[in-house]
Amino acid sequence: MISSDLEFYRNSINYILGVQEEDGSIPWEAGEKLDPWDHIEATMGLSIAGKDIEAKAAFLWLLHNQLPDGSWYSEYRNSKPVTQRRETNFSAYIATGLWHYYLIYEDKDFLKKMLPTLMASVKFVISMQTEKGDIFWAAEEGKEILDDSLITGSSSIYKSLECALAIYKLFDEPVDHIYHSMRALKDSINNNPKRYDRSWESKSRYSMDWYYPVLCGVYDKEKSLFQIKSKWSEFVIQGKGCKCVVEEPWVTVAESSELVAALVRIGQISEAEDLFNSLHQWKDDDGLYWTGYVYTDKKFWPVEKPTWTAGAVLLAADAIYKFTPGSELFSKTWA
Image 1 (tube, helix red, strand yellow):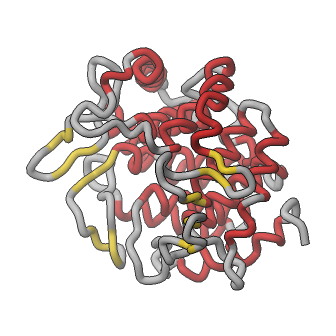
Image 2 (spheres, rainbow, N blue to C red):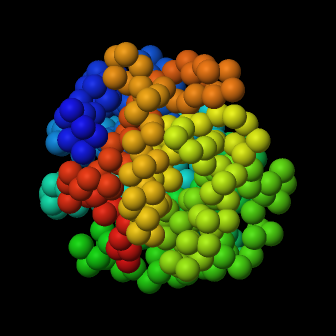
């Protein structure tokens, strides 16, 4: 069996299904924590796999657990919150997941059912945007706004706003506020880097800060090509994958899979496929992908096989091999 066949990923698909709870929630592993972003990443894996009923259940979990301000808590166990923090990136990602679902199934009735949930999440996210265009990364009970912004999270938000805009247009909803927010956010990431990592050490040592503006369409084609080339040798280990942190000898499957999708977006298909196919060596005997591999110690670490890693692999595979109409989710601009 070859990686260009969806059946190659059957164990990953079945794993997500097996971990999904009766209420639709998808924790990292059975009985472990859930965060809304990774829940949606795994949900998109189910959408690719043709599991529309289970994907709908996952989206309905978000509908039933949304807070009055349109956000979600950042962490749950057994569908009960274990933190008071609400992250903007996590709350925005439902738009990306729903648009992906619609691209595959064209189920406008379900999208309409989810529209109030989506609109509330967009309102929350935009309410966290500063006059300088950046979006605060989180709010927390007792502290309100946490005054800083993240390149990776903000890039993901930009893509989510783009997907929200596409959904709004389907239902003839006003979109000027989303356009304005996207323009301001894009300008901020491109031209005002001092607005990011103001209160902590720079996150530039993380590969996600390197490729996320490319993956999410924040950079134009020319800048994206330069960005990928500029740090390729720092983050990519030939034949192994992409490092999570520049100074650590640790390649991670999810980050590598996202980089694959970023490469597809900028037309580097051969490089994307080579990188992607280097990841299959990090599967266990059960066919599931480990989070990552420390190549100096020849050990898998951490000892976990998250559902969101399986989802990221499926998204990368679809981006390359075009299993579904959702394969262009990240390679196309929808606004």
